[in-house]
Length: 210
Length: 210
DNA sequence: CTATGTGAAGTGTTTCACAGCC
DNA sequence: GGCTGTGAAACACTTCACATAG
View 1 (cartoon, rainbow over the protein chains, first blue to last red):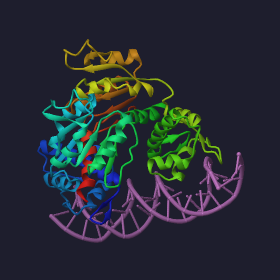
View 2: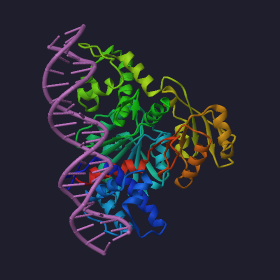
View 3: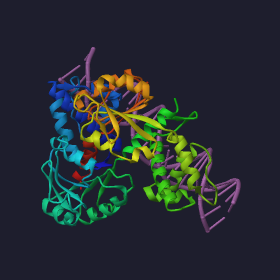
View 4: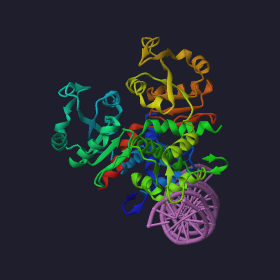
């Protein structure tokens, strides 16, 4: 993964999100500064790793002091791109889709679900948690008109690839896929998949040999 | 990560789940054999990687032929431990918890949600998708009586650590956590966390520099 | 004293390339 | 021709250890 010409490990970006979550908590608790050691201990990492992760993006620390909580949080937000507002669409208003529509936390982090889509004509036209549900036929138009950059797929597995194709055709920037299939998308689209059953399988593997 | 004394990369276990998902599909389509190249192409990997991943666990392939779909799937199920039945509890019956309770796919892969827990007295005693909801006070007893090994946390962030402590006290084997906090658990408990907002942040990072 | 930032060393993971086999 | 399994090389990531700074 690249940032300002440098090669940054994918795992570092993941940890940056964890650090940011921790910094929000420290900020709420009134902490002014935090050391790499303190951050490391919270996640079972080494202090060197935390410093290396942060140093990929510049020199934000103060020797003898640590990092200023508010400043580091703001820097990480800039790096992750969550200091700006992202418009998000959700496709597939089943029970998982509904749960995500109702989740307040996303908007606080800059992700605003502004439209939902479903094939079921009974759902089209309704509003769920004040998000308008459209028929799939309006997908391309609404994505263009509302400047939507990210889509979340919550459909059954068998239609997910078809939905991904439509999204790619509508010039979506990124897809977060919850359907349990591996999607094929053009490299104009950033793809991230979460398969809940696979998460359970990873636990099973570790439990099985004990 | 260890298997039969050998060190296996964590990423390999992750890919094994992906291979298994693909093998199920190939099996439905009637395929008898599959080559490392075919599996690799489906996920954007190299054929060498697929062979290496599988070879950590033995020699299941047939030179000149590939792997037998049914046999490899069964082997991977044994490795992942999903050839047996796992009893799962769900804690926190909010909208995400409900969505997971209603999800058919888990049982097919060996994960049976047999109990749910919530603090809300209005929910206790009810059945949701034929899963009984208990009050939190019965957590330890029900986990013991029903032989539950895996728990899924779907509570708000501020109570998740408290729930994790209770689960650890009830000798749970593994936790899948959906609350957006880093949990601290004793090393008798296997922990896996999925933070949906963090998944969106990873997309944001990649979108922001284009 | 505390703590960052970073070359160098160490460790882990992926890819190459080919022997062996169908 | 097809294909797997695997040493060895290449690459990627993490940790060590210390110069530098408050």
